[in-house]
Length: 88
Length: 88
Image (tube, each protein chain N blue to C red):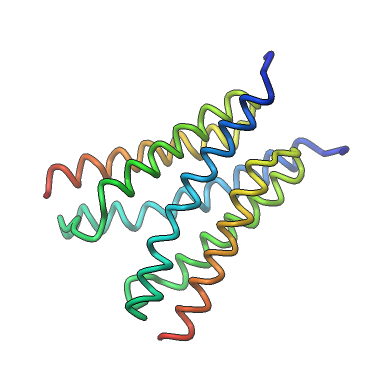
């Protein structure tokens, strides 16, 4: 398939921005309330494993959107894991 | 970069499976409790837009893991939006 890679790159970066900022309200909520009862560690570790595998997949297929979105997501999920352990 | 595409495909599919099943507990919880107060429509529509853009990005770069993971995620998010509107 012929693709304008500049367009695909832009589209992927916007997609990654939207699905990554979805974590931010959760991080802010946990920072403010120090309440992490609603978040399970199993769920966080499932998401973290998924994000890290996506990151590696992004490296293998040389996709900047997949690498950047899942790199940032993995960092935000690690932050949630640290807060979950700290505030439990 | 030389890549064994079979390995990348498998890795991407596992990554997609992990980040997609992360939505399932939320869907089950909403089905059981009919309580959608904790979920905002703005957040759901942000995620849905992100998943649909990822889906289109996957088509542009011909990535089966990106297409399948975000196709299923988009369906689960649409289900949450329907439940959110139904139970509000």
